Length: 187
Image (cartoon, rainbow, N blue to C red; front, side, top):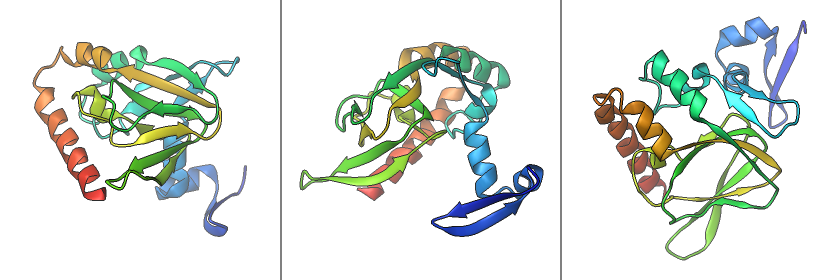
């Protein structure tokens, strides 16, 4: 391509070649980072990711390349049809999810017991990182809007990998505490 146009809500926000847009570090760069390190097999039912993708996730950004490669090898694929609850607010989290293909809706139930849509996540987005370190209840319900291919990592898999470097736990717990505080403010 000699020219790529990037639109947001019908408005042209960036344009240029692939390399120029990557160099700008804007919306195109962000989308490229989220999607370029995810690989889908020919059947469309299995995927894998590489360590470079994991570096974009705040809870993993301080991990060594060796640990990131070990974690990348632990992810499994899940396929969900449209309109399926993937996680339920209030249940104890056990997995971290990366959306490879598809879209999910984030629903947060407030004190009035009504579920309010609080966002849409799509290819390259992730959720559930708190579940890797704590037995905390999920802070939202996640429902598939389309057929979704997800990569998942369980708490047990994560714990077995980071057990090699116990000094990392303090930093990881700080990231989780910050995220929980942020979620509490949003409710």
